[in-house]
Structure formats: C-alpha cells, structure tokens
Image (cartoon, rainbow, N blue to C red; front, side, top):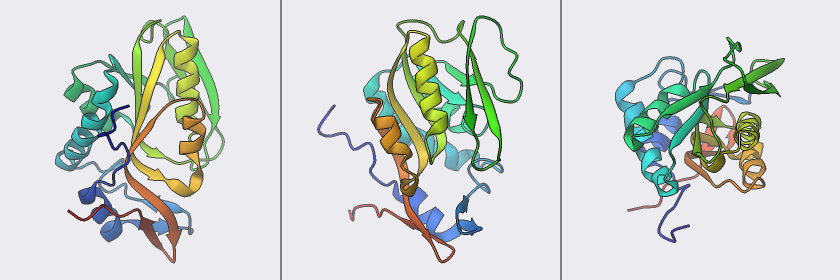
Amino acid sequence: MSPHLDLTAPYAPLVHRIEKEATVENGQILRIDHFLNHRIEPAFIFELAHELARRLSFFQPNVILTAEASGIAPALIVAQTLSVPLVYAKKYSPQVEAPAISRIIPSPTKGGHTRLVISQRYIKPGQRVVIVDDFLANGRTATALIDMVREAGAEVLGAGFVVEKRFKQGREHIEALGVPVSTLAQVERLEHGHAILTQPKAE
C-alpha cells in the first residue's frame, strides 16, 4: 500500500456535521439519517462519496459491491466516480437469478436476521471487488459480503465506509480477513447523548 495513502483520515466536513447534528437514541444508536441514509442530501453525499472514491481508487477495482438499501447511495457515486459497475446484495426481495450465493446475518439495529443474496451472474471469478457501505459497526454485513465474493471466486481488495463506530470492533473483523478498511469519520464512543469522534489533523 502507498505510504502516502491514509485510508482513515477523518474527513473534516463530515466530522463537524456529525458533532453538530447527530442525535443518540437509547444511549447507543447514532442518528444521522437526516442526511445520510433516510433523508439524503445529494450534494453532501456526492462530496463524501467522491472523497471515499479517491481513497479506494488505489485498489483499482472493477466492481463496487454494497448491500441493500442504505449503502446504495454512497456506493453508486463511488462506482460512478471510478467508472465501474455497482452490484448490491439483495435483502428484501431475495429471489435472484440462479445460481446465487447467500448468507444469513443478525441485524442488531432491526432485530432478527437478514438474508443477503447475490447472483453469481454479477460477481464472477477474477473480478476485483471493493465493498462500500454507509456504516461500519460490528462488521457482520461486510464480512458476509467478503465471504460471498470469495465463494464466487473473486477478490476483495478493500472496504470503504462513510462512518465507523470504532467501539464496535467491526474493523478488526474485516482486517482479520486481510481486507484493508477506509472510513471518513470514526466515532470513538457515545457519551452523555453525544458522539465523540476522532479529530481531523489541523491544517
């Protein structure tokens, strides 16, 4: 990896906005869905995804992979910026063209379990895949996607996320699989109703 590439440098516009606008529910759920993954601000997501694409371009992927549904917006812009296709694993309508690869993952925010499915028509042996999603917490979705890509005979070169919850250890699970992780904002902890984030370096 390039010694000049910092995959986890805090991206100041996002860090400052989370500090100013985020809310915390039940002491553990970080809410920034008013601009990231429910109500989406296209100009801001475009800016964030361009920065993520700049970092992930190092891996020279030929496919971007995400999971339905909240990862699609940033992943689509990353894919557009890098001029490669986007594939998303289906959750809510898991009937896809056979042959298909699937995994069952627990969903800590929604409760229960979720089935991820990818048609092998779209992830093929020898492809260079980078995973993109909105949040990295426990890493269950990302590790399932990595496993599915490898079952398809493709290679996972990296994974990029808009926001990382550092206190959830998802990064450790992904890096243990040999996949580098890039994030734009790192939440160190949730404390007294506020998000405490890694700070950008002073310019």
